[in-house]
Image (tube, rainbow, N blue to C red; front, side, top):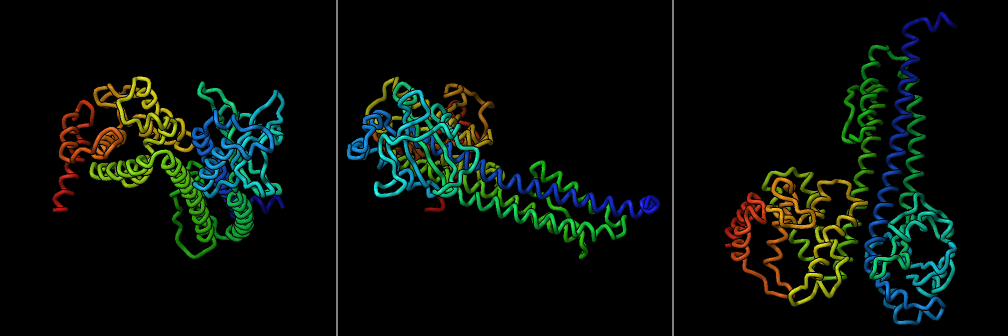
Amino acid sequence: MRNIFKRFDLRVIVAIVLTISGVVVLSDFLIFRLTYQSQLEGMRDQLKTIAQTSALLVDADKLLEVPLSKDGVHTPAYNDVDDLLKKIKAANHKIKYIYTLKKVDSSNIWRFIVDAETEDSADHSNPGDPYDAGRFPEMLKGYNEPSADSKIETDQWGATLSGYAPIRDALGQPVAELGIDFDARDVDAIYYRVLREAVIILLAGIVLAIVLGLLISQRVVGPINQLIVGTSYISDGNLHHRVQIRGDDEISELANSFNKMAQNLEVSRRKLLDYFYDTVKSLVLILEYRDQYTLGHSQSVADYAEKIARRMGVDSKTVDMFKKVALLHDIGKVGVRDSVLHKPDQLTETEWENIRVHPVLGDQILKPILTDLQMLAIIRNHHERQDGKGYPDGLKGPQIPLLVAIVTVADSYDAMTSSRSYRKAMSQADAIEQLEKGRGTQFHPDVVDTLVEILKEENQRST
């Protein structure tokens, strides 16, 4: 037996079998782990964002007016909060349950305030009904900051993932908690499907490894090295990488399986972007509920920003994400009072301070799901000026990224050419004149020139 393993060809065959089996196991592990975890983390981030945004819409004073008794469901305060929660639920099809809870003493037995389920539903809870929050650490944490469960819970109500956010009073103190349960059947199904496929691929890979081990060693070593390098690319997050192995033998089939696995992982990443899309739509619908002007303005700014970016040579992939983020540049205004947003008269200094905080609030809202710092800067810094007199960070000149400067110009132009509660819309010519006056002081000169060029071309085509 020892003499047999002294033969180089047999030792290479054994090494090939072990290497390919290891590659398949590693590939399965990466795809299984990254696919499921990416889906779960995407849903958790989306939950925290929607819970935090929704909690901002709840009037804490009105919520506390609801008596913690069964008769509380008949009070006007209960009905107002219940209507709001149902509108939020209708804005996102993934929300299965939405409710509010309150601490009444130092124990972990909390009390329901408003549960958006209909009263005749078996899942409905009345004001004052007890709930053992101590079973869920993230729920306890959610009384002070946005949080989400780290795993999917499966019980008689199905597979759900829950997110929580504090409801704060006028002094910023948490007085209750808003909870949202997502229907997590899709993610749960992905878990078992990927697990099943991983086992099948593993078994198929082992069989192929044994067959490939019988081939001539020199012919196999090169392709195996390609697979190893490909696995390294995938583990580093380069999901576009594919191995190129020509032929019609077993190792080329293994390469095709590897490429298929990499493609499946790339599809999973695109699904994360779909979750982002859903979040975008939910946030915009919530903002529309607060202020009909915001939706039209945000869409116009996103359209102008896209045109400017493409004309200035920004690559298409970046522009696609840029437009989605530009659509949300004013999302922080969900935290601004209606009386300030719609005031027809001149704002007081205190009211201006309330307005100026919306970029920071928008930055905090989107941080859980928008990890690209370049894109997040658009939300936070779109009111900065070239001369450093903007807010909230007082950035100046080259400190302001180009994409941020593009949104600033697009935002200002559309604001000037749109009617507001306190003034009529400017003409296009007057708006262009204002942009050119602010060229180099308030606005990036090249961005102003690009937008003016685009507008003139559009005017020529329309005449």
